[in-house]
Structure formats: C-alpha cells, structure tokens
Length: 259
Length: 72
Image (cartoon, rainbow over all chains, first blue to last red; front, side, top):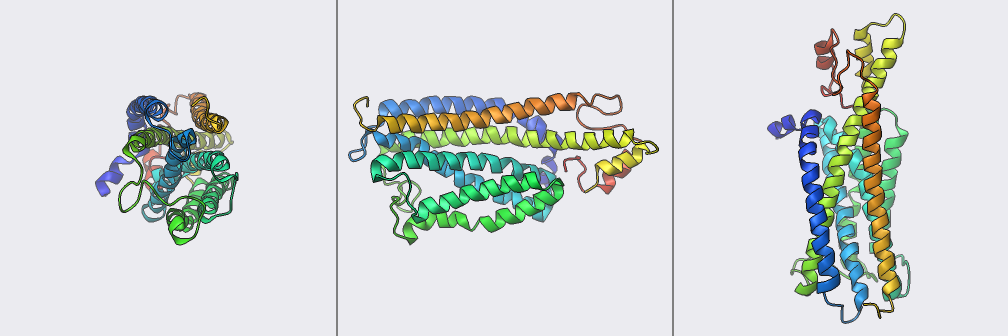
C-alpha cells in the first residue's frame, strides 16, 4: 500500500494521464461503435417490450456507473480521512459531478422507458426513489465542494458526507428484493447468473464496458483538471502575496501552503 | 423498428444520453483549456510551468506542508 501511495503523486498522475487518456478514449469509441451496432442491428426485440428494450442498452450501463462511481468516491473518501492523501481529495471531487451526470442519465432513460412500459413517467417505488436520493447526494456533494472555499476543509466535509451517503448503495441494489416495486428485479448482476438471453446480454455487456471506459477517460481528465486548479490556486496566492509590500518570498510560500 | 409505436421514446432516450455525455465531455475539455491558459499566464521567471518554484526556503516550506505536491 505504501509503495502504491508513493506512486500516487500529482506529478506522476499527470504523466500517467497524458499516456492513458488517448488510449482509454480510443477504446471507448471502439466499444461504443461495436456496442451500438450490436444493440441496434443484432440484438432481437423483446417478446413483450418490442423495440423499446433498446433503451436498456443505455439505462443499465448508466445505472451501473451511478453506483460504481459512488463506490469509487467512497474509496477516495477513505483515502482523504485515513491516509490524508491530497490526490484522494481530487479524485473524490472529480467523481461527484460525473456521478451526478450518469445518475441523471439513468433517471431520464428510466423515465422514458417507464412511460411506454408502465404507463407512468415516474412512480415513488423503492428503486426509483433511492436512485433519486443518490442523485441528490451527488448534487449535495458538488454544492459542498463549491461552498467551502478551503480545499482541505471541503475535502474532509465531503468525505464524511460521502461515507454517510454510502448506506444508500445497498438500499438501491436490494430495494427490488426488500420491497414490492414496480421496477423489475435484478436480471444481470444476480446470484443465479444473468436471467437475460445471450443475444441481448452480449450487446449489453459491450455497452457496459463502453460506458465504463467513458467514465475512466472522463475521470482521468477531471482529476487532471483538479490538480491543475489547485496549482493555479497556489500560484495565485504566491503571486498575490509577493506583490504585498514588505512581504518576503518565504512568507509568500507559507501563505500559499496554508492548510 | 420504424413501425414500433414507441420509436419516439427510444430516440428521445438516446438523444438525452447524447446530450448528457456531450455535456460532460465539453465541460471537462473547456475546463482543461481554461486552466491551461490561466496557468500559462503565470510564466514569471521564478515560477515554472509545473507549479514548482525556485524560492529560497522551498525545502523548509515543503517539509512543513502536509501536502508536498502543493495539491491542496
């Protein structure tokens, strides 16, 4: 773990991101090309839902990412609180907005799938409501980061908020088992294996991979932005302090590194 | 598929997906370009592009900081 943390420095990360982002972006493009082709031209229509099942190839990957990103954020929150690693702060902040985006996509596509299948845009069942709560948690975290000016204090507050909010993840996952919901039970990630026909499962797997690589690409880019933003902040403080009359460069350094 | 009565919902879902994904990509790329531009404006001789400086008490300051990379 210690050796891993030694590599997790912002400078090393920026170097790594420069190499990885073009690779993951290319892979994302390829996977989306294959996935969309399979979804629209190979996968058969559902015997009950007809072609409306095509929305699944967008909705399920978005739902998967909505929860995966929260787990990534929870790990980063532990990194902030336990190891106090500065890169964990950046990783946590960068994930919140992406999580909100993919959760909104999940809710939106779910609504557009629900109307023709259930006859309602929205129902207050346990699955839909818990995902809405997840979306509100993401928005709360984004707001928290923007409200607290000091990055160190914001990181600790967001980390505690993230850990408290993590209780919602098992609720989302098991809501369809614990309560009677209009939303169908799990058909892919379940103990007995996928309950979905292979002709529909494989396009779905490719789309899930495409979305996962999309997230990895955007996440690397967003963390890189956070590192640059903090460097900009530090340099702005240094420049402002250096311009104050009677202030030495050493004291300007101290001001820039104030926790 | 063109005869599917729910085609509008499918198109709307994929259009919504495109808007969300494109929005995230554009936001992140625009943010990156703005940050790079702002960092480039700090091109004073004593401050290098990577945010490191040649200050006299640099090692002391870094040693005192819990954030040696200057991330926080």
